[in-house]
Length: 87
Image (tube, rainbow, N blue to C red; front, side, top):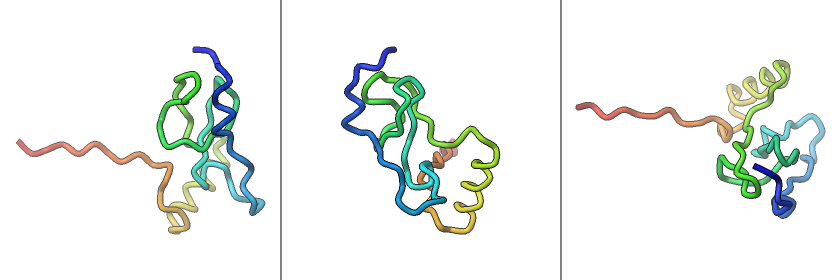
């Protein structure tokens, strides 16, 4: 998978209020293209690589978790659990 350069159309700008994380405002990162994107899907529109929706740094993970628990965020970055139908 190689970056084809079409991802620049979806490039996200830095969030305005300083101290606000990119993931907390709904931006996602493609490791192959090395960009933060405004994209609703789980896969990069350019290279097809899986987008990161959570930070890797433990400190930033904790900050995001606290924001979600406080109710500041609508849990944009959390995936819904798979519900199993009762048979």
